[in-house]
Image (cartoon, rainbow, N blue to C red; front, side, top):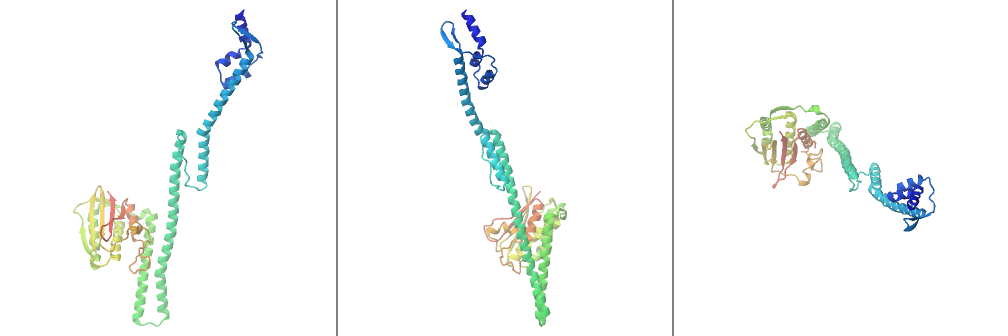
Length: 364
């Protein structure tokens, strides 16, 4: 009889057993919705030991289940927000700010593996974009500076030619004065022509790859011939030479005409800015798969703050920019371009004594 009562209880209130076995928030809801029987507030005596109000027990379990799962959902939602939603909001904020021209903003590092990949990728991309923007700005500034220097350097000889020509036309001058003014006009025209030629070559070195005509030949014998060609100019200007070129043969692919121009520019620079009796040492060597050319003098030298700037176009240590010995201001800039095109580098070596030491390194 007792077994029959229990059986009837379970048949009419079968949901009770499911709640006990599966106390899940979502399962509870599903079970309640699927209920087709009304659980009555009947009291049963189970096994003759105690009485159970089935409806009350079921309702209590359901409420407890809802509360437990509610707390679980609350903390899970909070955890999800901290782990996913907040990082996503941060990523969106950083991207929007970056797009609004703040190229300095970066994403914060996160311990979340998925977002750390996004953070690293974005920050690397942002660094490259910012570097590109800075280079672009510097290039525009260099172009503005270059145009200003070009205008200034063109105006100087043109003004001299114009001024002295007007004097020759309008004034009564003796023969010596005429010769003197004509000589000034002639020198100004030479400077103007030098400037135009250097500007043309500097421009071509930047934009025209066809200007280079490389050939493979013995660079050691070529360099020896180059030094011999300039030897008389050094001697005429009373410079003292020390030449060191090894008796070897090194085949190297280069443009003989342009590389000659690059080295002659250094020679001209040494003669132009140093007094007579300056010692000049020219050394050619091969070391660690590199050709090394060292052109060193013990002249007036260059201040450390100018050592990197002298290869910039129109840079002049002489701030007056009107020195009689001043050239186009493009010589060493042209030299640097030519050396770099040969995948080499040029720089001024630090010297413990006075003078300058140009180092050219060309990879074999």
